[in-house]
Length: 401
Image (cartoon, rainbow, N blue to C red; front, side, top):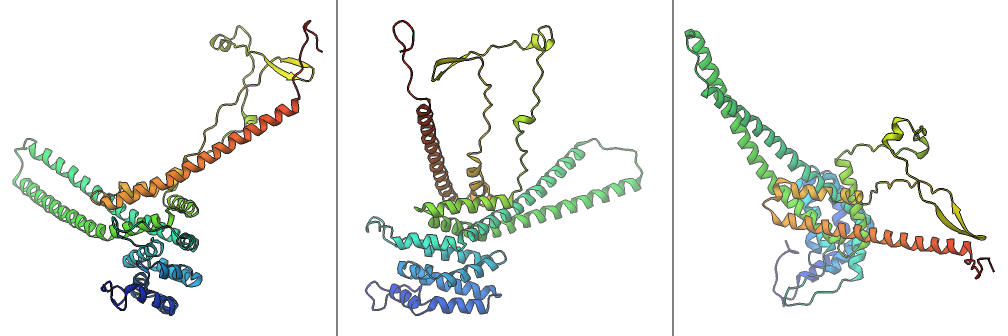
């Protein structure tokens, strides 16, 4: 409360001075030590994470010192990871702490100039990512998305069953009544209809309760997803190294959540059976007319020689250039398709920004690979021409000079 309290701009003790004093006097080490003593208690872990988040919020110098503490930062992330799946508050506060550690210097828009990116900020991104923060945040994000999706799909299945039963009940009510039954049969039929009506009401009440439960869960999960997406953006923005690490973490999370079918290996060219050449009167020759491949002139030391045939060109194999990109953005696409994203544009905008960052990274990699292949081809062409030597010239009479 002392660190987060608002003070006057010209006060004797400012918020930034208290934050820097807390970090310089060993506040991080003492907080992590207290957390390790009660690491099994999620409330203690939450309180310690809140304290560190308040200590580095809007204070770049304090955030730099916290990010440079290797062992203490690693223990802090492991404690958050231990309770992130069971306690939602720990997951949210952990993502907020990483946001404050990676955020830029605060400034007022339209009044202050945009502060330059410092080397300390880039180093903080790399250190926090190297300690496993990316895997932690992507795991929190994937778990939250799957939890909301599974509950929503379950409720939709229950609702579809109720709609189908209501349709059947409506068709039975519109059907012509059967007369001539005994009184006992009529009583038994009325009792069965009353029981079915009571069961339908109970099912409707259960579905409404499930929808209410989903709405309450979405409030908490939306805050977690928003904090996780913002932390991923701040960890990867303007840093090629952390962007590459983020792409790998998202791809690993996607592969762990969705079991992809194993791909069949491509057949070896030697294992393919080549059909035998059949005579001119066979059915195959009548169906497929033979094509004579043109000859090709090849330059040699003695002049231009003529090849009798040209080898068959192999068919182009399918490339997997975009498969890595699809795996990396799979979890983010699930975020956009999730039920709680429909009325929360903040989550959708952050997911779209992450997708654009990852696509730009993979596009730059594809361009680099393309340029490298072109340069390699030019080198091979130059080497091939040098091995052949100069082209022999011919005289007026057609003989070689």
